[in-house]
Amino acid sequence: MRTVALPYGHGTLDLHIEEDCLEALVETKMGELEPAPSEEELVRQALAHPIGTPCLGDLARDRDRIVLVTSDHTRAVPSRITLPLELEEIRRANPRADITILIATGLHRVTTEEEQRRMFGDRIVDEERIVCNDAFDPTQFVDMGTLPSGASFKVNRLVTECDLLLCEGFIEPHFFAGFSGGRKSILPGICSEETVKENHSYRAIASPYALTGVLERNPIHEDMLVAARRAGVAFILNVALNARKEVIGAWAGDLEQAHAAGVEFVRTWSQCPPVTGDIVITTNGGYPLDQNLYQSPKAVATAEACAGEDGVIIMCCSCLEGMGGSHFAELIQMGTPEEIDAYLSGIPANQTIPEQWCPQIYARILRKHPIILVTTHLDRDTVRRCNMIPASTPDEALAIARQIKGDDARVVVIPDGVSVLAVAG
Image 1 (cartoon, rainbow, N blue to C red):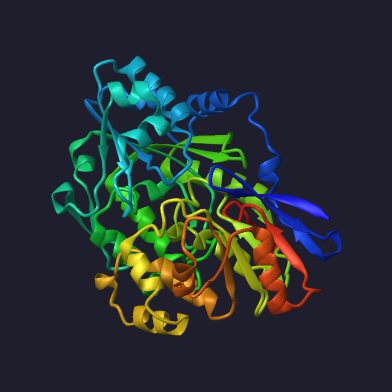
Image 2 (tube, rainbow, N blue to C red):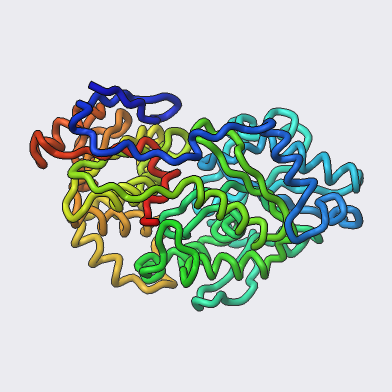
């Protein structure tokens, strides 16, 4: 018998499985990497040797109003490390700089002060100007035309009022944008509800190129990149993280060049050949990405790549904050997967419902694969209304899956489905 610790909330859940039933344990090599020489030094080195731009201090020297975009409470960006180092370099070159830290929320709720203190540390919260993007407040945005897809581009007006725009983030495989990081700080990060919805429309999500690890011809990525360039992003700092959320790589400089270098690193270390199983067990990597059901399709899409034609998927997601959005909750419970997809497919891009992209992806997967949801924070009736099978532990879920696939079913375990790029070679 083998015990596998699966990330769940702020801890883990144990899965017990017989060795002869375990087809594969799929983990990225990134989990093996350590910060060397240290997390802080990796970031300092990146800032000292930017790709395709002058150093941050040189860019900031004669600028009066600087906006630094960072991620919100749903992302694991190590801002406690990165922000102080960026602010230090800016102020060393320009002590009088007027700096605003703009939290990129996308369509998420506003980040609370308690969350900001956990993310940034007390000193930054107490001493710096911090603004949360609110996609639902039209007064925050200015119209900057249309994007290649025809979508409108409305971005936080602080972008047009500053004379230096900087972004920080982290890079990992993303289930429809290809990879996170870089241009995503702008779209969806600090754009209006209207712009985010059009970027995440049914047609865009349904593109055969809107997939994990795919950037070329990906319409979602292409709009994001144009948005970030038009907004005037002058410098980015992006990092890669291991399973313990430690910095194992950092890249700074040009929006595209620095991001491309980080993507190449992440692709190299996270790519794993898909291994097909009758039952595939995964997680969203624990907190913060498993705090609600809305975020969970990220890992389920990875499991899909290993589940063959009709494999059972087991998703462990704490859902500490419940469903994660009223629109998502309504749509995912509105009917069968077929009914959900039929309804969403009829919605024009400019009328996209917030959060509809996650029910769309779930509907696609549920039409082929039973999904068992392991959670201790959603009641079982709610899980059933989401077209999923409820379970409280991985072992209970595995027993249910074996009732569907048989006692001799081959099992693939992906402890962190968000970090894995499951594509052939």
